[in-house]
Length: 98
Image (cartoon, rainbow, N blue to C red):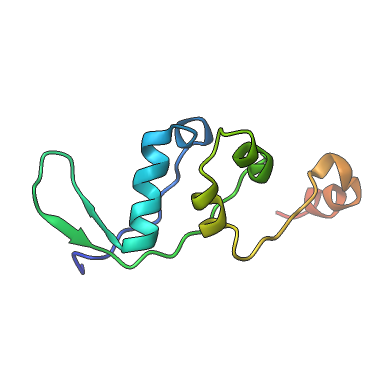
C-alpha cells in the first residue's frame, strides 16, 4: 500500500467540534501534510474530503463554534438533502427491497 494513502475515515461530529482537531484537519486539507503522534517526521498525503452533518456549519462558523476557514475549504460543493421525515414518500420504496 502506498504510504501516502489514507483510507476513508469517519470523524464523529461532536469530536470534530474541537478547535484542536479543526486546525489539524485544516492543515491536512490546505498543506497536504501531517505528523503522527510521537513522531518528528512530516508525512505528505493527497486528501479528498467528503463530509456530512446535520448542523448548519455556516451558522456554527458565524457563531464561533466552527472555524470559518475550514468551513470555506469543505463547502466547495454542497448537496443538501432534506431529512426523511420531510420526504416520507422515499421511505415506502425501500421497504420492499430484499
